[in-house]
Image (cartoon, rainbow, N blue to C red):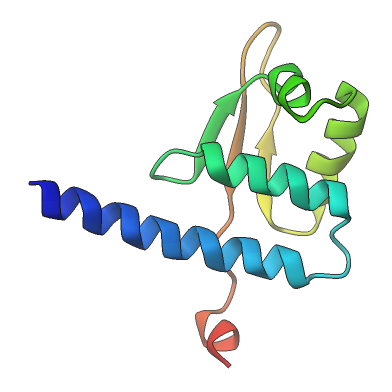
Length: 107
C-alpha cells in the first residue's frame, strides 16, 4: 500500500515539475505570476486542483488581492490554469491544466 502511494506522489511530482518548467520558460509569464503558479502547484491535491479563497492565497503571497487576481487571470489566459471564482464567502477552484503536447515537451 505504501509503495502505490509513493508511486502516485512521484508521478504527480514529475507532472508538476514539467508544468512549472513550462511556465518558467515562458516569456509571457511574469515573475510574480510564476511565484503564484509555484504556490498553486505546491498546494494542489492529487488531481491538480486547489479549492481556496483568493484572499487567503494573496495573504500567503503578501500581496493585494487585485495583484493576485491579475496574476491568476494571466495564467488562465495563457492556458496554465482553469480559474473558477467561488460565490460569496466560498473558495475558488483553481485547476492546473496539463501540458498540451507531451511529444513537444520531450523534444
